[in-house]
Length: 375
Image (tube, rainbow, N blue to C red; front, side, top):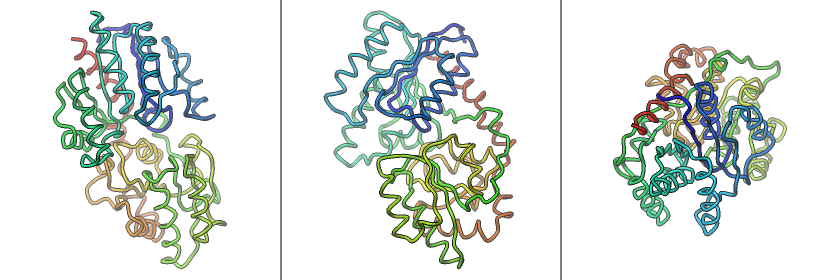
């Protein structure tokens, strides 16, 4: 691949898995001699995200441009779009890589406008779940998938983070009109070092956005039910933030768990892993969540829902996989507490994980997509 490319990553919110994915690509691409920049929303993120930006700022030769990008489609998109276009035109990228629905739209629309001006730029799109969570039978789903089909005409390459995401895209949007690749999320070498639980650590950990899609309510109800079935109180730590945080705190009180559940603001995942013995990912929908990969790489015992690309990480029949229901997550919690050693032994081998989900593998495959698009 040619060195010295100018690469811009466009995405909406600098939180969660998309931001993690972009940070890893920034590090790898900068180390490979490319000039990299970011365009993202200015109204989301907090202290933790500011620290993450500080960590990569020196790698961003094209800087960080933050503008207001609303989650929902609206008139505000016109102003955001115009500002984004001026930024992109001034930065003169060789590659525009859009992440998520909004980032993908910005990269492909404005990359196409640059092409009208006879400026050569590759337009790539990584859905990261996003719009694919919508029901195609709903009015909003029909609108969003119609937009996706239109944007497919101005895409040079689509990058899927799981085979599930690819199959869902085909089912809801249609076969990509451009070349497409499967590129799994990847972890850095140091993340495959084990993280031991602290003395007095909780039984279970939830870490992620505090919103129903991620299943914090399932986690709380399952914890209460598992305590009843085992005949002893179980404890938990919940790490994260979101608009529904107050509701989950109230749910903990209602279930009689106030003295056994501790809430913490967002923190690095490896720091959170030390706060409990078993990590639970009770999501109702996912694409390929980093938190599952991070927990397994750190040697943590896990319970995760059988949604999205999560089953692609585990072996068939793994006891770690449950359905996103209170009954199923409860069963997983009870099984993990009754035989912690056996449950831990059933987790995927970390050496195999590293060969499939290493950041170097991810960056190499993304660069191949860039090269193909530029060719």
